[in-house]
Length: 450
Image 1: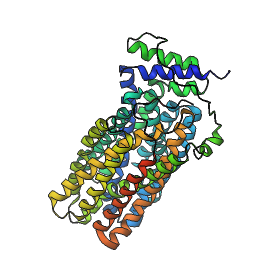
Image 2 (image 1 turned 90 degrees about the horizontal axis):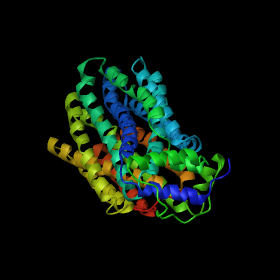
Image 3 (image 1 turned 60 degrees about the vertical axis):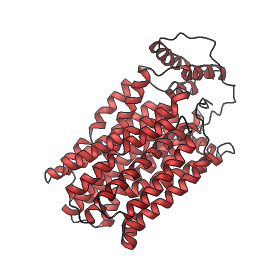
Image 4 (image 1 turned 120 degrees about the vertical axis):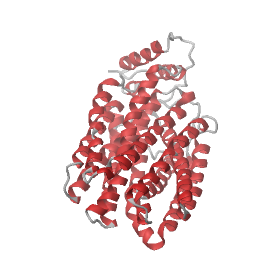
């Protein structure tokens, strides 16, 4: 099939940007968001399960650290490979397959009888999770109208708080209820395997991706349905973006193109932000239940504290979603990262129950708001032909930090306790806040559809 004209692609992109928010957009957002929430539920559950298994299986901190890190090893590989596959095979297809992989692996974890098998299964869980998250954010960003694109991606990221809250509720009510409570928790994590069927057949493919692959007829049908849903008529009055030379990279060249002069600074910056935020976030939140338990609080009470801390994620996302279209991507991201840095220091120094909850909620508020802004800006800094690859590799670099963090935290706790650990997290947040200024801010601008 001949390559479609860039003018046609530009016209299609302009029509997507001209749409109001419709029921079809809501379906794409919620369909992707449910998958996102299920991801968060799985990642959150392991922090509670580790605390239980450490007691029931008499595990040391090194072993429990590897249970957590095995999933992040899979996530690092999954994120980089998943992005490449999504740019080649399509956003929806890869999204569905990754949900299936981690849903099946999580459900199988409910049946394990030893650490070795659990670590292997956590790797496969991470493989699916790592590929799904950057693909989902790319998918939604390619449907979203330019004027609200950042806000919609932050709302998508807010589903993470829904999933993490669900994991905290399961941790508080289900896991302590019986000796097999942690197995029931894993069984609930198998839900994504079923949900993958809906994703595969219930959601449309990205029309921007279809157009980039020369499938203009399919792209046109999807955009026309969106316009019909909005009760709009096609009109030639829509402004077209300037025609630009297509990149049309092969799979083998996509990663190399991330380092082309045009993208080099933004690639360095986004990789650094992802690395630092992952280290600080997973270092803190995977270990908070165990840190509280080690401080003398019983499992139920430490899980209850974690539940309260988790609830602050939702207002963090809400404020970030409002600010990101007012302040822009970079300022919103850097302010929330700075707030995370201050909150981390205060949490590490907290001595009373009230201070633990208050500073933990502040850390949760700022850190998850920063995550929302980061997921909004990452797909925007690359053109359509590189978008999932760029987002996937940034997430993959970040997952390297999330592998290191659960293993490093026991060493930090042994050297200086929670104060030292959270000061280190604060340094990572500050570094990320500075690196954010190397990113391209495309607030209100059309995506690059090369």
